[in-house]
Image (cartoon, rainbow, N blue to C red):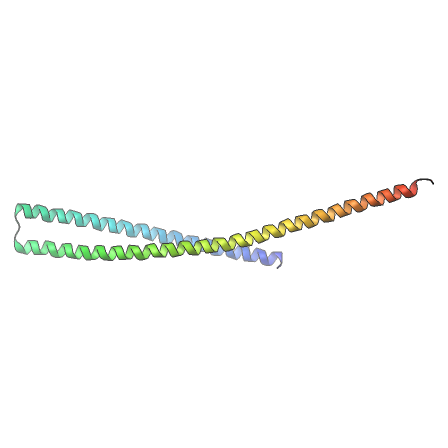
Amino acid sequence: MSHQQLDMLTDLARDARDQAGKLLAQERQTQQQTEAQLQSLNRYRAEYAERLQQAMRDGIDPATMYNYQQFLASLDAALSRARQALAAQQKRVQQSQQHWQQEQRKLSSYDTLASRRLLEEHRRQARHEQKASDDMVTNRLARQQSDKPL
């Protein structure tokens, strides 16, 4: 594999990792919004249940009691749907996290391969320079030997 090919693969892997990171961030933000909605619904339900309790202490007619109960039942259904939405969103966050990790591992593999290739290139260059240096010393010694009178 050429340097250009490896660089291209590394760039593609980096872009894929970055895209996976953006998706993960969006999924986490959506999860936070879903959690906030669930908390708001829980607070509203608790407040409404408290109003019902207060109305019952003050005295309430059956029709109003029925309306309170129906509304609380609809809030309970909304809470159930919100919990399901949160569970589904948490699963999407987990999947996005795994995808990001997979893309990060792929990028790390290419980076490792590039580092090894660069290290090998440096070693090869050092050996070449050492051989050139050894050849110069050998040639100099040979000239010095041939220049000495016998």
